[in-house]
Image (cartoon, rainbow, N blue to C red):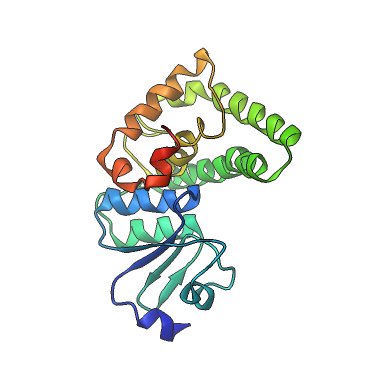
Amino acid sequence: MAVVANRRSVMTLFSEAACPYSHRVRIVLAEKGITVEIVNIDLDNKPEDLIDLNPYQTVPTLVDRELVLYDSRVIMEYLDERFPHPPLMPVDPVSRARSRLAMYRIDKDWYSLLTEIETKGEKAAAKARKMLRDSIASSAEVFAAMPFFLSEEFSLVDCYVAPLLWRLPHYRIDLPKQAKPVLDYAERIFSRESFQESLTETEREMRE
């Protein structure tokens, strides 16, 4: 594994053009202006390098010299610590713990439903769509409370939630009128230069 990693002198991200978990990491990379080689792979025809580096053969996978990481949140927190400016996590332990809990809940409550929409039959997918729509809409007050998600500053939590919000039209999910704070928040995030830089052509087509 180390031999394969050592062949790469530039930080490398194995990504997939439509993968929301890869998208999270690409936002962090763009926000921090990190020089990286992004290798967009075909999940049905994975490159040998990825197979050698990652026992789970999943994306995103980050290679930084001898270090290989393959969980999106682990990668995001590593990048934030390795490249501290601009900081994307709070300094104090209590606020950091709250941010980590928010990311955990976004995964459990929202991204798990995306997985159901993508992998289950139409009846189960329709139920998951409604659950996701209602859950996001019921969180409108959270999105309205501050300029960013639970924060005055752009953070890893925003990088976490933005790919999901970007994909809602693709999954035929229309938020109700009472979710206007969510839509306003999404537009603020989508207009950021780093977010626009993070998008693949496949992701851009999701909104066309």
